[in-house]
Amino acid sequence: MNVIETTNLTKRYGSRVGIDHLNLNIPSGVIYGFLGPNGSGKTTAIRLLMGLLRPSSGSARVFDLDCCCNGTQIRAEIGYLPGDFRIYSWMSCRGALDIFSKLRRRNLHAAGAELAEYFELDPTIPVRRMSRGMKQKLGLVLAMAHQPKLLVLDEPTTSLDPLTQDRLHSHLRMLTTKGHTVFFSSHVLSEVEHLCDRVGILREGRLLADESVETLRQRALRTVIIRWKPNLSLSEMNIPTVLQVEQQQGVIWLCELRGSVGELLQWAARVPIDDLTLEQPNLEKVFRRFYEQEQNIP
Amino acid sequence: MNCGLLKKSWREAWLITFLFGTGLLVFEVLLAYFFSLFRQELLGHWVQVKLVQDILRAVLGAEVSNQMGPTIFVSLAWVHPVVLALVFAQAMILCSRVPAGEVDRGTADILLSMPISRWQIHFHEAAMWIGTGALIISMGAIGCYWGNHVAAENLGPPISRVIVVAINLLCLYIAVGGLTCLFSSLSDRRGAAVAVTFAVLLVTLLINLLAPVSKLVERIWWVSLMDYYRPVEIFAGTDWPERNMLILLGVGGLLWIAAGVIFSRRDICTV
Image 1 (cartoon, one colour):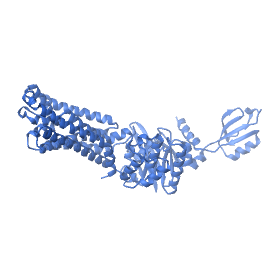
Image 2 (image 1 turned 60 degrees about the vertical axis):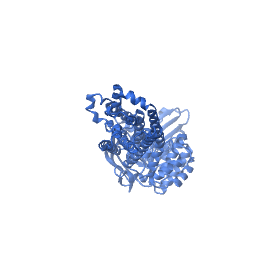
Image 3 (image 1 turned 180 degrees about the vertical axis):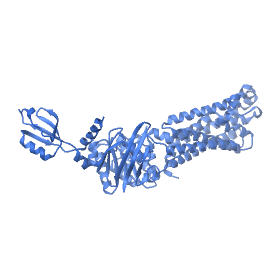
Image 4 (image 1 turned 45 degrees about the vertical axis):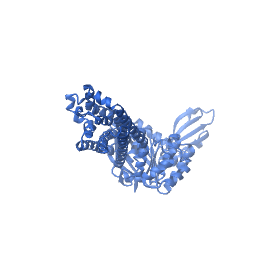
């Protein structure tokens, strides 16, 4: 069963399109990265799933329940961290856990205290005296304290220090091993690449790709850095079709590999090269390619 | 009932309730004391002046020439601008908290991500603003009774009449609360919701002020909420103003339901 399922989900704000015919199928037990630049519709999609927005057309289902009609049931099993997390200034972590326990009708004190300790958050400090990072940690504690089946995190690492980011990543990985699902929006490509099993790339409300990180990586063009031997007439060099030269800086050339590594190595063995570096494919290249392709469409 | 929702609402409402309730109690006592000091002078001279009678008629919203006595002073204490300002402010502040206030300060996302329906939130909020409204009006009633029977040497109205006026004021408070809820449900900005409610109340008060002295305005007196709140008639008579109370409750209830329907269906956007 898919944990999240959207069918032609569309949200319009007057003439502006927030989300355009979004079709998502996210199975349980995965970390799903939702990638896109600012204004691409990530937050709109999340707010539709949370029932904060009503779709203009199409449907969104979570745990096989309609997000509009069964919001209360769905939200009992969702932990949500909004992109711009703000909470009552008079609350402390302990006070928030007390009120959230009553709101959710579950005792969250023990799990919440454990999470606060894990994220090194003082449970007694009121929100008005917290830094941005501390507030974000509080948001994470409150989103995860009830051990939800689905965690919806809208850019959760914003204002977190690298150490806490690492802790969050390992905690999320641990959750997925227990069968929990994480829906994770971000515009930090490296983070998504390292953390997520599957990635959806969004642009102007449309889903451009929805694949595993590995598949996307395989589709990435790899950069080849060639350092030629000095004192050569480089203009006479015969470049094979598997390589496309992107930049020339003296004897150093930056190329894109558009064929197999074998072909490249066969060619490299025959030419006067001092050094050759073949970079790892990464998501950033795929991401940029998607956007460049889209922008080139007239 | 969800204790978490009530606890959260009470945490945000207790201070204002305490301040306004205490303010109302103290003001009613002081007013009773002030009127007791100048009772003879006021009754003997000022209330006989035609202009003062006209002003009293406008403020109290009823013909007062045949009721010139201590009743006038007690009634004035229940329509005094300070009293109405405190009661209306309580209604506007508490009723604009959800959803406009929550959206405005960015906490709506967290509140609405809980496993509670929007109607449940609307219901709990109503329980809180009606409960705290009843509390501050009760404190005003205690102040009125205590002030008139202690400071003014037992010259005040019986407690039963004070209670009827207090209940009528509570009905008015519910109508104002319902109105604020409606504007709050339509808005993402608390300030805007309060401003529009305030403007409507100002018109209401203005109609009530002008209706006794203007035939033209008198024709639309019925649209003013204040037309259904007449302390002077309650203190002068022995009946319950059931019709007025039912109208105010009906208006408040309908506006509250409309607000709930809008809130339950609207988009909650970030601001």
